[in-house]
Length: 404
Image 1 (cartoon, rainbow, N blue to C red):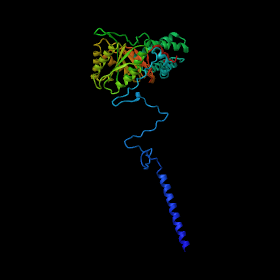
Image 2: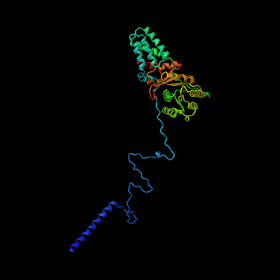
Image 3: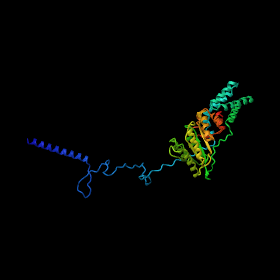
Image 4: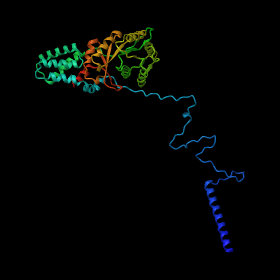
């Protein structure tokens, strides 16, 4: 009996010891030991966890080797702003010979006219029906009634006198007659010679860019700035289209690419005032040329057209305007002639810029608009690229038409 009681006591003591050891082990895992600070009693405190910052301190991500350390120059103080990087100044393509370089693009869109005429002229028998087809081809290409009749009569006479009609003879014949009707001797230079202002100061040349809505005036003005810069001219841009919110921003973007300053005014402000200030700025900077982009306006709106006349009169207080370039969309065809007549009456247009000539098979509009206004086509747009505005060269244009 005593032996049994002794065994039970031993078992209880063993269980108590084992439980104490287990509890001690768990406590050790839960709270790792830490050394007490020197000079203090044996009170042991657990260090704070690394992911929990101390009160009053901010956690910061560790600096990796790949991340560059900031220097004092990198620190931006409150209230300061970092200046945006200056735009890189581009070097435009030389203006001379651009139309030759773009001839392939022009010929792809205009081959209906040239190849159609060559095919008809190459027929074995040129009867009345064939000549009527030739006439229809020219009219469809927007050459215009009077120029078409003149061209057909000259072709008929020359074919009759020539007698033989080899492909090479016909090509040369058609080239000569198309050149004659386009006018190879017209003055197609954009005049950018400065002069003297009314105050006796050296004055830059002034070019007004006008046209109806949607013809691409602002883009054309920006591209023309590139043409002039490529020719070694310094340019100031006048954003006188104050009615279209994005026009001034768009023009300034074009100018910044070639280092040209843009003079702007408040949205909805007086366009004539902006144009005047642009010329004044051009005089102050001794610029070679001031390009003034005017607001697009409907040729049927008398008030808007009168305002355009006011812009020209105000600019002329500094001196005469050298060029008034009318921007026409080549795809509008004969409707563009109506627009051209009204603008010519208001501001005395001196030259035509035909845009989107690469997107139409109606290259005859070159002939029609010149005949209607007595004003030469001076520039043509042949694509969406920044350097796709080219000085108009009759020989290169005709060669593209007939695929030579």
